[in-house]
Length: 216
Image (cartoon, rainbow, N blue to C red; front, side, top):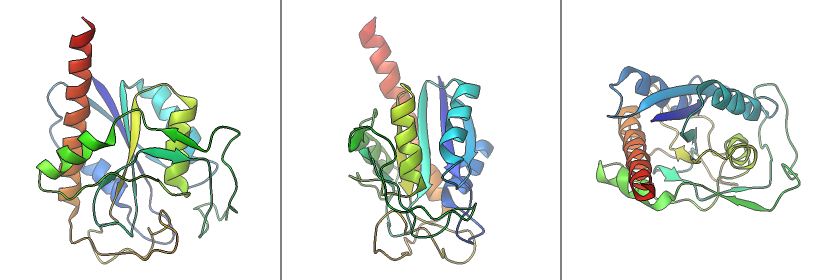
């Protein structure tokens, strides 16, 4: 089973992005049994994030997609339930573009995830990493990528926000997901986030295998 995991490049002047760091660590670890892991890092730009995600899907032809980003105001890993039809930037993207609040497309206000977030959160907590389901992916580029996944593909997929953990120092950005929020220290390290994402990969792989057996 091929699973595509994507992260985002650093933005806002920070030298790291937790989602990129997790993707890099996943490449170094032994893959989950029965899973062929594909990865991609998306640019943090309004013009580039969605197309880069679609290019990665076309290149790897995954059966499942887990897209990752960071939310600096959150202290738990948060699988998302839905993508909002709203794009807005409190800060410039990496191309210097500041997007005023406006709809992302002509579709409905919300698009629902294709992977139930509750079992993912449970699986993450089972490996000792705090997790909870989130009802909104915000309005910055993480939400835009999630919206692209749900709007422009039919691949089973979802989005998972990670706390803005840094290998060195503290995050200066990452609170774009939750309006008016401040960056918080989750007390977690990157390896714990990797453990949580690996648990998510195992969870969706098992769900897909069970679904295939039910169809037999």
